[in-house]
Length: 145
Image (cartoon, rainbow, N blue to C red; front, side, top):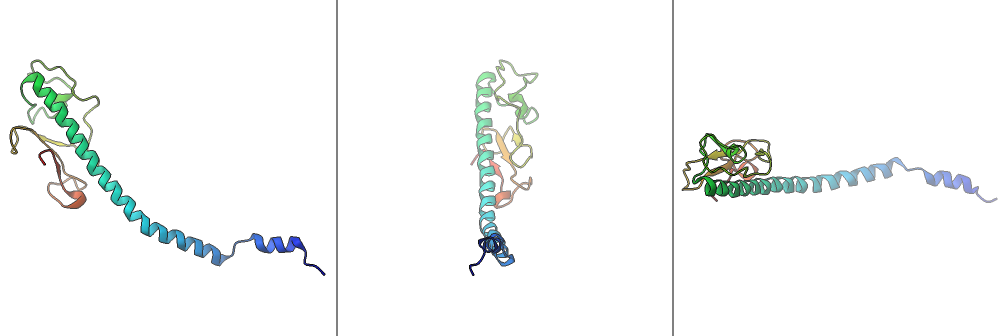
């Protein structure tokens, strides 16, 4: 007597518990190996984004200085690139297309002029921790380096 093909199909159609555990284990191992690398790339991308934003601010500040003869003061801040300060003669802005953004970690950029680092203004992002100093992802991103 031949085996019934329907019974054979029913036996082969299911997934055993061991097969499921093997698949879950492989997925877990893959996630533990790949996830840290993805987060490192995300951190690097935020640093590059902050550097790019600082460079864009410096371009806007150079245009501001060409038009007005000086950089905005620390009190006027980066907002002077978007909104005409009261005492800015020959202001021909806005010098930024959009509102002044926060840094990639959601903190405001620090703007200082006059600067402690020469004749150019200082622009600083304090990194992931939002505090001065730090190493790695918490390191400051500055305009003078």
